Amino acid sequence: LDVPENAPATKMSRQQILTLIAMASINFSSMICYSILGPFFPNEAKKKGVSQAMIGLIFGIYALCTLVGSLILGKYIVQIGAKFMIVAGLFVSSGCTVLFGFLDQVSDGTVFIVLCLITRCINAIGFSAAVTSSFAVSGKVFPDNIATVLGFMEIFTGLGLILGPPLGGWLYQSFGYEIPFVFTGCLLFATVPLNLWILPNAVPSSQNSFLRLCTRIKILLICFVVFTLSSGLGFLDATLSIFAIEKLNLSAGSVGLLMIGLSLPYGAASPVFGVISDKYPSVRKWMMVVGGMATAVSFCFLGPLPVFHIRSQLWLTVLMLIVVGFSLCMSCIPTFAEMIACAHENGFEEGMSTLGLVSGLFSAVWSAGMFFGPTIGGYITQTLNFEWSAGVQGALAFLAVRKINFRIKAISRRRVCRVL
View 1 (tube, rainbow, N blue to C red):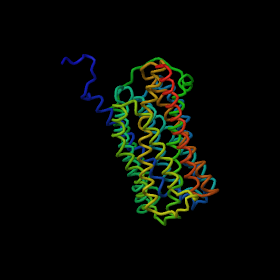
View 2: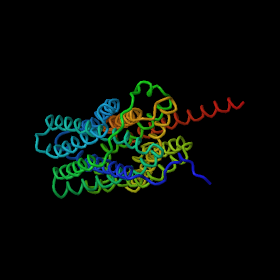
View 3: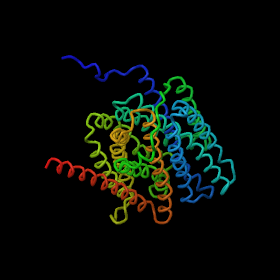
View 4: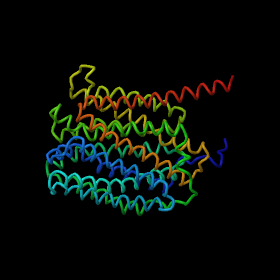
């Protein structure tokens, strides 16, 4: 049989391999820097007179600034340049990570809180520049199998999330507060020259409208799914360590190991769901539904909810974290590819401008959830307890499933009417 001239190449080019290495380095180092706080920072902040709600805000402000930064930088990615945004973002983020390690030297109370918030805000802007651009570059270099590539990159996201908490907990117990941030900040800075050398220069394209993209119902539904997923992760970042220390009597180092139960299944399942999403695009919606339902159930049993009259136990917490990690991965992997496909279906051109808009919107919605989860979750935890707060996260995931399922049924009914 003759092979068509336009058949996609099965072997990756040198530029694609180098881009994959660059994206993997960004995901791995950024996630280590982000996740080291979980095991020890909430307890350290409590020693400095910071309330649970304010700890949630310190975690959440990072996501809020990432949200704003993603929307603005995604809109102007063509003018600024994707490569410059990645390199500059990594440089800023690494510097702020190192600076955060010296905040234990400042006085307790208001000064500590304000400096934490300022440092986290600047760090978030750098992070949003790097991540938004990396999504856009990935979509440009791998236009035909973006979900597979994102699934592969999520392995390194998972590795960063796996190694970050236990590494942070061990460095904190062994060397004190400063060393975890100095070490991971320097690791992130090492990716700056690597990406400066490896990454391709993007070809300019025309501008598209953010407003037109956000008026698509399908895009909005996917955004809500992304919001619920990131809200759950942000909630766990800000509250799980204190729950584990107070209710399960774990040390900071043990909490770091506990968090592996969330990140290990996420990283391990990512490439599998990425390949499935690319090979069978029609199952993406069902992946979001099944994954969302599993997420809802596991959050309700994470505490577990007081209505079940089940005592908090370590084995149950670990089991539910494993299910959360697996189900979050199943729901999250197809979302970005589905958003790109929806944009193209609605007349958006296949260029860097569209990829910048989609990646900016994706990062912004993800960040909105990462702000909502720690702040509202932290407030509910302080007012009620961790068990009820986790139940709220489960309810959000269930609501997202209901919306997506309703959309699938509506599309099916429309197709049946057309046939009749």
